[in-house]
Length: 503
Figure 1 (spheres, rainbow, N blue to C red):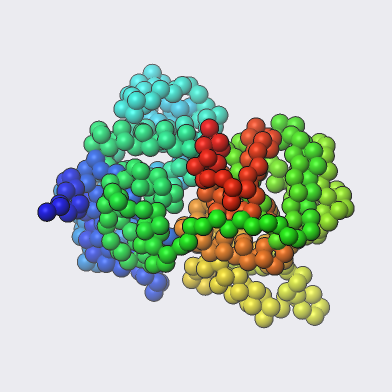
Figure 2: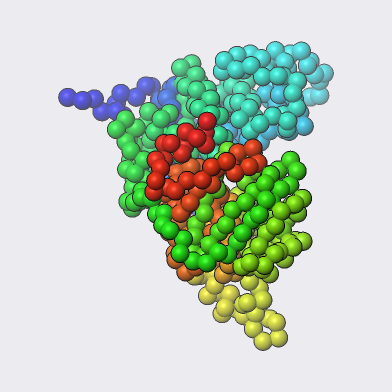
């Protein structure tokens, strides 16, 4: 008789029972059980709003669970957890933003917590370096200890964050979307580090929307949906499609949607160049077409989008819209011409954090929803907001809540709603699903295809090759600031496209 995977798990590093958390009448977690074995790599999966972040904050003492919860950390029972208790118990969280100090050195970042205390004292830099070197040695990693952290690529900063957790004697590490900004080779290197941690007895809880790497690295996966526990499953034999169904309660078709572009040419780029960013870029984009643009981070994709949206000026080349040359001096010029841009950086370029969800959603169409005398029409505003938030399945409390109260994925969907409301001729989507869960991704791409069906010309930029393979009509490969290849997804294989991009 086969063994139950749960019973085969190693001794518990963490055991939570009956975790419930209610915020102002909204149930974020409802009777959730969660356990991690010592040295186990465990995945915590669920859509945005499923309760993952709330659960992590309860484990780390940021939130207190409602009465009746059971908490055990390495065999010790606790009635409540504080941040100090969690840290002393060996629990650490590496958030997506890493929370490091870019102006400090690698050694200073890794050994930072050894400097904390109640009284000022002299700092021994030799001891800092020894501490940092020992932490990196536990990961079998060698970094320049004197390097300024801000000069390092994101992959090495991830390593620094992990090493810092080890300095604080972490025995259970939560990693929140650790590979979101990494190339495939960098992701592979990070997963190797995670395996090293596991081999040396450190438990790792991996939170990621990239389901392929979840199934590769984790032994078990706990799935949450709408604040409830769906179940705990072994990853052996699990597929991405099955895991997606468990997370969302819905099955998703994974089929190539490419088709011939039948509409007239809308956008033409001729020999566009900007020193140090991109060089000699030429392509056409037709009405009703979804044109994919992929490549590794640093290939020049975002820089190209910035010029197409008037944020930067190319040194040479031409941008033509409906056959007429454009001189885009600012993003206002681009919007006036019917070009919209959904940036991958929603915090800096997408949203005004203190303002409400509703205000952000209509920020780009204020004139359109104004009534007599130039005053905003409350009726038009409400109709616009409710339509797009419903279409994009944005999970909110109230439209009047600050947009900063939303999860990262829901914030990105508000950005998309803001630009779709302008009814543009050309829509530039720069990694529109960064931090967005699988269910919302499917919804976004369904809407993208519907928009294309109505004649909108769409440039879909993504470093995730499957996204453009499945959802674009043509795919351009950008590397080193140049377009080096073009594919028709109907005439190539995903693995061949991935091999070329990640080479």
